[in-house]
Image (cartoon, rainbow, N blue to C red; front, top):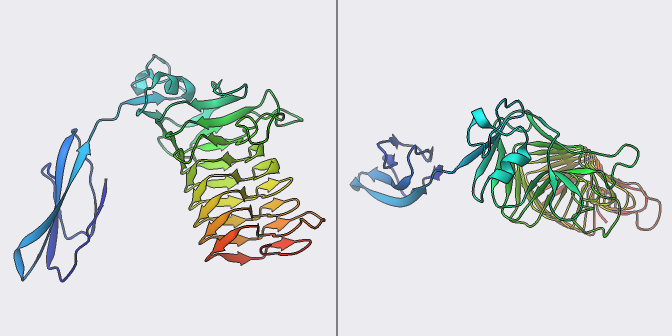
Amino acid sequence: MSFTALIEGRTTASAWDFADGVTVSNRPYATHAWAVPGDYAVVLRAYNASAPAGVNATVTVHVVMQPVHYAAIASANPVPPYTSWATAATNIQDAVDAAVPGVLVLVGNGVYATGGRALVGTLTNRVAVDKPLTVRSVNGSQFTVIKGYQVPGTTNSDDAIRCVYLANGAILSGFTLTNGATLNAGYYDSHGRSGGGVWCESGATVVSNCVVAGNSASRGGGAAWGTLSNCKLAGNSADESGGGAYGGVMNNCTLAGNSADFWGGRARVSTLNNCTLIGNSANPGGGGAMECTLQNCTLTGNRSTGTDQGDVGGGAAHSTLNNCTLIGNSARNSGGGGG
C-alpha cells in the first residue's frame, strides 16, 4: 500500500509507524505490506522546534488475505480448485470457473490459446469472467498472452473467438490480447459484434497494463466499453467504427495504427485522458477519434481517408478537445487536425 505525507509548515523530522513493528523516517512517500490480516493504525508524526513531541495523523488500514487460484500452461497436475502452483489449471477459464467473487486468479507465463466459453449469446470467449474478480499475470504483458481466433478469409464469423469478456466489477491486468474476433451478423452495438480483444460490461470493469493488438470487430476492434488504464492498443480494426476502442474511458493509453472502415479509427464515443494517438485511420472521418472527449492528449499522424463530404477531422471529428496537441494529421476534405 502507498502513502503520501501532507505536512504544512517547517518540519525538522517525520516518521511513519505501520503498527507491525516497522517504522521509517523522513519520507514524504512510503509503501508498506503487511504479512498478517488485521486492522493496523498507521501513524504519521511530524516534529519541529515548536512541537518537539510531534503532531500526528492516523489512518486505519484493514488487511485481508485474498484467496488465490492459479493457472499455468505447463501445469503437470491440474486439480480443482487450483489453489496452488502445484495444482494450477492449464487454462485460465478453468481457474476462473473455480473461483468465487473477490478471488485473485494469478496466471503464469505463456500463450493461452485453449479453453473458453460463450457467456452471453453464441460468441465464444477465450476467457469469460462472469463475476467480480481479478485476473492478473505474474510477469506482465510481454510474457503472458491470451489469444483468440480469427476465421481465415472472413476474420469475424460464427466460429470466431474473442479474447476476453469481463463482467461488471472484474479486473484484468498484465496481458497481451491478440487475434480476437467477433460475430459478423446481428446488431452492431451487441456484445456479439463489439470488442474483439475485450468486451467490458460497464465502466466499473477495469483493464490495466495490457497490450491489445491485432484484434477485429464491427465496433471496437480492440476494446468495447470499460475503463482502460496504462494500455497500448495497436493494429486493431473495425468494419464499422472504433478501430481501437468503442465507448468507455481510457487513461494514460497509447493507440497506434488502428483502423476503421467507417468512423473513428482510434476511438469512438469515448473519454480519453492523457492518451497518445498515433497513425490511426478511418474512412470517412475521425482518423484518431470520433465523438470523443479528449483531455491532455497528443494526436500525431492520424488520417481520414474517405473522399466524400463526411471526410473530416484527420485527428479528431465531432469531439471536444481540452489542452491537446495535434501534429501532422490529415483529411482529404477538411479539418486535417480536427473537424
